[in-house]
Image (cartoon, rainbow, N blue to C red):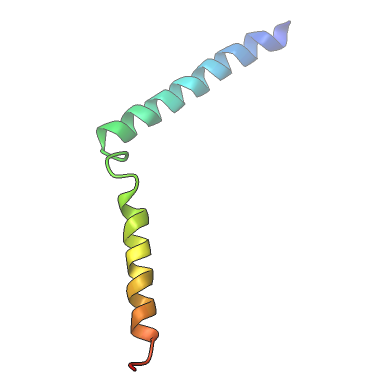
Length: 56
């Protein structure tokens, strides 16, 4: 039972740290464009493939 006296405040503290990290991320626009980087990588791969092909 004494372990709960330690574990409950520790878990609440970790939850508050996670909540603080989430709030910080949303305020600093970390979630604005989630798919943009993925599409840019695909576009770069296609242009690199085209550069490597010999001209016919």
